[in-house]
Image 1 (cartoon, rainbow, N blue to C red):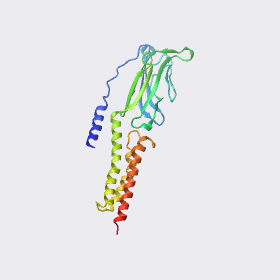
Image 2 (cartoon, rainbow, N blue to C red):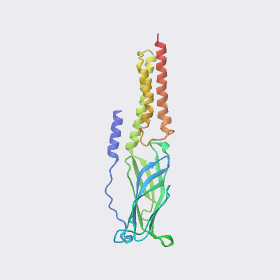
Image 3 (cartoon, rainbow, N blue to C red):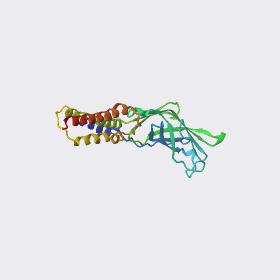
Length: 262
């Protein structure tokens, strides 16, 4: 247990490097789009992001307002795929929901991938709009997830593959909680079996201890990072064993009480 605890602490301490400051600037005639991933929704197969757009000097007037309409298209997206900023206004960040392929039932080893994510920026409106050279930067504001991106297009970062996975510290913490759960029925089975074999004296208060342990399973499970839904593999391989083991311990102890009673 001590070794497991040390492993989790070390993984947490070394898991995040924080990254350095980003000093990128858009081209004079182009745009820089930041997609900041701030949440992962495995049940909805989506990544919650916030798009921040920075336009080059040629697209802005002396007041910093847009010279003409600017449209940002993000595909494929689970929400509205285009963001429009009107001429004469300033750019702002807006939420964008991306579709991501993954399976939360694989917790804590679940990963999510948004393939061929394309971001394009157009200046103007209607048939007169023209494509603007675009650079895309994907960042994340999540402490428990790691985000990797790969360029899939010859252009300047317009098309990307985004891969999101849990950090090593998060996985280690989740597995540690599974180990804690698994130890509960081992302890109760040992006590109940020794009592049933008359190697230990029957103590009535221990029945209450078994009941408390049984009711502690759900609160401990709810501490799992990411809140995996009921029916995940961990329920079949860990939680089910824990509940059955604790219930069996209670049965053994009641049987010992029946045998040793007057």
